Amino acid sequence: MNIHEYQAKAVLKEFGVPVSAGKAVFSVEEAEAAAKELGGPLWVVKAQIHAGGRGKGKFKEPEAGDKGGVRLARSVEEVKTFVGQMLGKTLVTVQTGPAGKQVNRIYIEDGSDIEREFYLSALVDRATSRVAFVVSTEGGMDIEEVAHKSPEKILTFAVDPATGVMPHHGRTVAKALGLTGDLAKQAESLVTKLYAAFVAKDMAMLEINPLIVTKDGQLRCLDAKVSFDSNALYRHPDIVALRDVTEEDEKEIEASKHDLAYIALDGTIGCMVNGAGLAMATMDIIKLYGAEPANFLDVGGGASREKVTAAFKIITADPNVKGILVNIFGGIMKCDVIAEGVIAAVKEVGLKVPLVVRLEGTNVELGKKILNESGLNVISADDLDDAAQKIVKAVKGA
Image 1 (cartoon, rainbow, N blue to C red):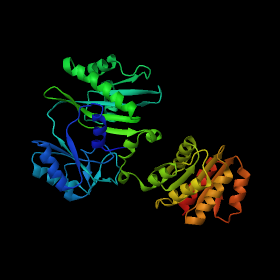
Image 2 (image 1 turned 135 degrees about the vertical axis):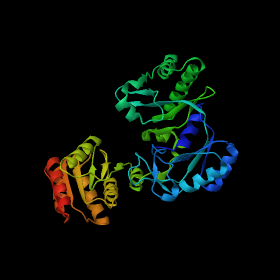
Image 3 (image 1 turned 90 degrees about the horizontal axis):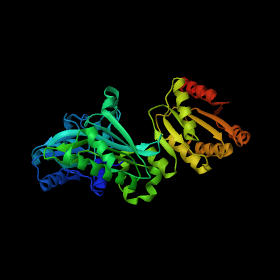
Image 4 (image 1 turned 45 degrees about the vertical axis):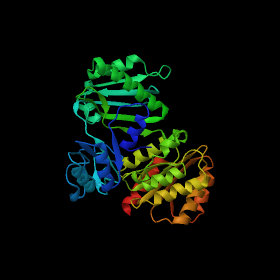
């Protein structure tokens, strides 16, 4: 689960992480009051969407101006102007895709006198099963670009969960960033606080870009991007309360209600598969044969008929779907349950696109029998390769 920058900073502030003062606003009137309360003389006006690259982004609407989604204001009137231009408009960045995201809230923040900019992040390293830190002197830039052009400027290290953060971790960060004296001590304190926040709140990723040194010698997190482990949200009702469903795909929201692993994509072939690995393989083979998947959807190993029906309805709700591929390898999941779920869904919502079904495993013959006797226009497939070819052919033929 993702949250907005201002929410991330509020969470970090609970752990003593240094951030600038700021207020989230939802109208020009609130922006004026916030700017006066903060005092100025410099304010940063930031569009709040779940995507990076806001400063370099472009608004679709000409009336929003061409200064991107992060702007410096030098008067209260300028704050009001920028907020009026951005609220309700669609911001397109490298991470939103061409559709962009509508800006429904703005963060007004105190301006900072910047001396230097750095990059600092923490994430779960799957290879070591530890929290890893990524540090670079190239703050304010896309870390992917830095990794590609100047990999020697990136330092990574993992923290042993048995010990947690130790003093040498802070010294490692300070050395990598060229910080000495009091700034080195601040770096040690910052790493300790960030690690504490990461573990306590079950974060999946924490990115500070940029981490700055102000001209009066203070470390400060100028931006914050945080995502949380969805499997641990039951432990954090305070974090769940921060969820902004307007930033999420409606189909993904509906899928979460049924405990389905669903991610919307840009293709035309809807996929319903059990098991994440098999789902990835299904998407890969669809691309191999010249088409694009419309979604990732894993119904899980023990899905009920109701869950399968919900999954099918979510797929058919996507207007871009021109064909559907059901690929089930029945272990715990039984093929007859899948068949019954598909039939129930089709009877409820109808079937207007080609449907290819590949079943294998537990109760496979019963599942095929149920589908064959249903009267539905279902194309049977013998294996995954056969299924992919058939659905791609059916969609392109249509």
